[in-house]
Length: 498
Image (cartoon, rainbow, N blue to C red; front, side):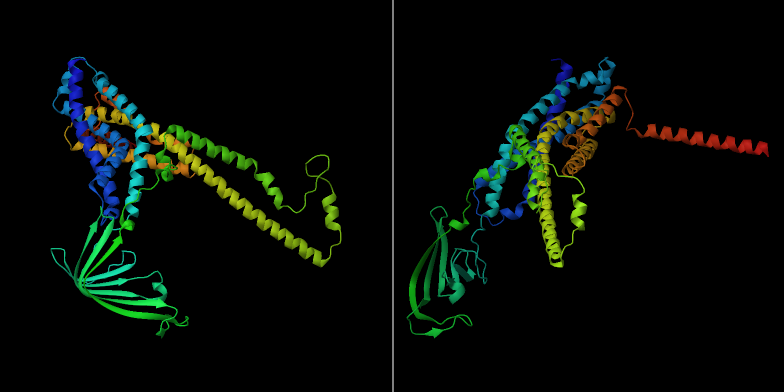
């Protein structure tokens, strides 16, 4: 490896590692902020957060690689141009294409890495990350009681505390314990206590409520007790035994199983296209398209059941043609038979319309699903190739602009990354709406930006001053002088003619 190659690679790897880390962090924070409401008040272990951050960090890598490639290559050649190192390289007879060669090889390697990452690591990370996120979202909030407000998230209980002390002691506790038939008989057990405390045992599997100096009121409902009352207007009379017990110390133990995070079977999420590699996507796409073709072939035979009459020739299965329809229409028909025919025809039309509507929706769904899976397969290639395309844009732009640092390069990188995102979304939208074929929509962004990259490489080879304002000022002056001279000649000609 020559010293020139080492210099360029050394200039590239520093910004690449920094920008890659920053971009992954930014995308990770974006995802975390989007789901922040699902994490609040959840009693999650640090290992759960660590796993979630790890999986979503892996998910963001394919998206971050093109942007990091664009920004780092632009900064590398921008720094070389800003400190006149690129000028010295050109003066030594080395072309800009030769100077870009080592980074081109790196870009090809990163593209290959991105492809295998998209095909192998990303589906696994998506499956693990989103299944874990689903379990976190469905987990209940931690038991947190506020002063003076009834807490009802613990199944079977309503708890109110007048005052919470720093040592964990609770003052003025009121507990309503609901029975399985509380909706019918109301609250059948009430506990009042001067003080108490609550804590979890057995790895937060059980909640212990210890109460001090209180009274327990119980209303036991039965069929043969003495008092009679109506629980709901119009309901049958019920009987109860009322009891009151004072205590110095009373202890309740309840399960917190509903508050724990339960891991869902990951197989429930494998149907999604993001959870599949290229082989799985090919199989799913072929299966959907085969089902679509078979359904279309069977559409006409399946519709025959909605016809009341089927006139056939007898020798073959084609409909018999001839004047029999006119002769049938000319036959006298009674009014009652006409009504019956019209009623049967209307029912047949309604059934046929419903059948066609359901089959049309089914076929559209099959086709959209097949396009969706095929589109994801193409994205595994396009997202990998976009790393190389971003290099073809960033490196020549850096050589043309001759500006390093995080100022102009960051601005230009954001612009081209937004263009990549917009073209990708637009292509996907056209595919899902059935306006273009899947390959056309999937490769739209790479095609447009690839042509832009080739143009910038050509401009860099010819030492174009594409982004220097004095060039455009010179063009404007030329246009201005041309217009002035043109109109001046026209005025002289008119004056001479007059």
